[in-house]
Length: 166
Image (tube, rainbow, N blue to C red; front, side, top):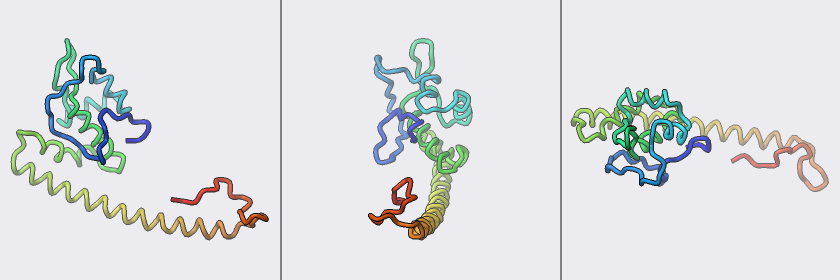
């Protein structure tokens, strides 16, 4: 997640945990109400309700009179946000999220696997295209840097940011 999107759970090598172990927040932890989760992930309450309506997340537990999300829903939400950041829609990742449910049919699991492979191929192609464009931009940056006049110490005078591109 980006800096503006808080992380509710530790990010272990980008792994997404979808299994619900029934873990509720400890009593002194912040309850995972719709408002708190909205703030933690920097998403609107309306978007959370939309994801609930689509069956991607759900407030599974009660604390007092309020329904709250479980950690599994925060994991799923983190995955959805990451997918959206790379240009995927919630609708595209929904079959995979729904297929991990205990009640998922064998056919829905097969369909989700196929969808998953399709999205992997699409993102892998995008990564190759981005790497090519990045390489070209780095080459142009170096060419432009060579065209700048150098000072006595060999550093270009107008090199304001003084950093090499990654």
